[in-house]
Each structure stands twice: as C-alpha cells, then as structure tokens.
Image (cartoon, rainbow, N blue to C red; front, side, top):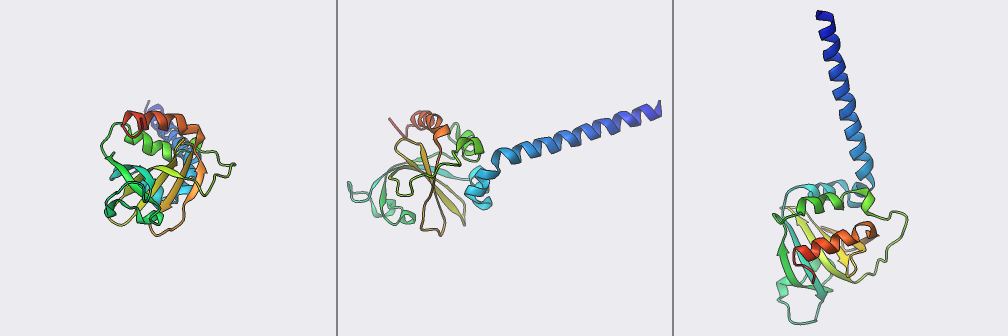
Length: 174
C-alpha cells in the first residue's frame, strides 16, 4: 500500500509539471511575436497594473490646446484634444492582454509608417513610457517608446472592431 501511494504522488507531481510546461509553452507561443514587437521592457510595462492614459489626438495648431498638452514624443505634430485615465477603468486588463497577444496583429503585412494618428494610450512608470497610437479606423497601431523619435507601425485589423467597441464604451469615441 505504501508503494501505491508513492506512485500516486509521483504521477500527480508529473502531471502538474507537464501541465505547467504546457501552459508556459502555450503562453509563449501566443505572445512571443508581440513581445518581440514591443520589446520585453515595454511589453512588461503594458501588462503591469501601472498607470495608463487615453488621449484623443488632433493635429497641432487646430484649436488652442495648452502647451503642456503637446506630445513632445511625437515631435509636436499632435496635440491632446481629450484625456482619460484608464488605470482602473473597466476592461483595461483585457486591453493590456489584447495588446500583447500575437493573434491580434497581421504580421506579414507592412503598415503605413506615415499614418495620421487619432488616439493614443500612454503606459508609463517612473522611468519608462510608451505611446500606443491608433489611426481613425483603429486598424493600424503605432509604437513610440521613451527616447525613440520614430513610430513603428503594424496592422492590428484583427482587434479593430473590439477596439472600436471598447473606445466607445469608455467614451473616447462617439
């Protein structure tokens, strides 16, 4: 009887190990390309529960936004028309997960690098920040990280409809 109990414990421990490895491999496979796109430090910043703000953008010079609303990271080309704190907003955890899932991007299609950005999300902590930019149709996403003057764009067409619904639900779009 002692021997059968030992076998049961070994079998359960082996099963737990196998399931743990399978879970880790599944998560790796579902997010490794997105993590490469974002970079590991930025991907970590996105998925952490730190501050996130949403902005409605307009070309600089339209209207009279205060000087502090200009986004220097984008070279002064855009001003903030509206700002919203999403840190504790409903659905933010799901948004963070969606931004780091491989299936939400079209990896083999080049996105326009000279896109006109309409919305931005800013994930930040004391030392780092990343602006996640979106076109008006929410089908193209751009990344502008701390210290980088350029914007790297990618098609996010698979999650565009979900983004439209989420942005409308939080009051960012009409």
